[in-house]
Each structure stands twice: as C-alpha cells, then as structure tokens.
Image (tube, rainbow, N blue to C red; front, top):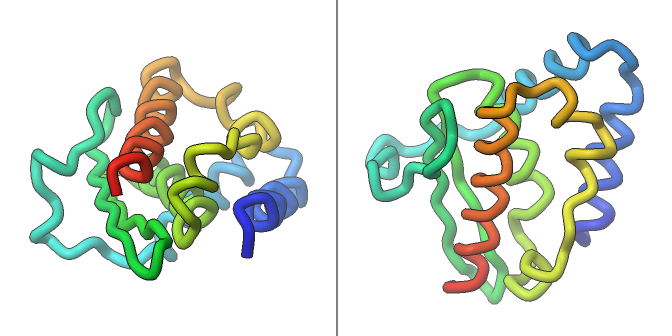
Length: 135
C-alpha cells in the first residue's frame, strides 16, 4: 500500500470527528495500538531531539523497505508518532524522502498543539526522513 493511500485512510478516519477532543482520543488510541518498543531500544541514542516528551525512534531496512518502531513516555506523543509510523513504515527510502506529508494539516493537528509539540512533531518527521536517507 502506498504512502498516499495510507495517509488518505488516516485522514478519512479523522474526518469522522469534528471535535478536537475526539481527534485527540483517536490519536491516543493509535498510540495504544502501537506495539510496545523493546526496552533495549529505549536509549539516549534513539531519542528524537527537539521533542517535549521522550520519543524513541528506531528504523531498519528489510527487503528494500524502511520500517519504524517508536515509543514515547506520553500518550499524546505516542499517538502522534504512531500516526507517522502507520503512514511511513514499510515504504521505500526514496518514497519516504520524496513524500510531503499532508496529514498534519489535513487533520488540523498543528492547530491543537503547543509550539513545543509542533516542534517535536517536525523533529519526528525529520528524524524519519533522516533514517530513510542513511539506510
């Protein structure tokens, strides 16, 4: 499934809700559904710099596709990284690097985040693209 299709599915899920609190609940639920990251990967080396919360992000390559695993110490941030993992994981490095994510604007996520969380979100995307560039 392409990035565009996965992103469209996420956007459609959020379009079911008009209320920002309902959207936050969906983000939290996405975080709860994400597999727990093995404790051995929750290291300072894998921390995403620039996030208000602690976010650990790991990437690996398998069959010419990039896969991500992530975790966070807060439910909202874990949901945000889960959303990004859902869309970008399992894609080629070239596709990840070339794609401009629309989901953040489409679901009006930035409008409901503090400036620190918005910066953290940008750092997460940047780190995911960085991993795609080196793997």
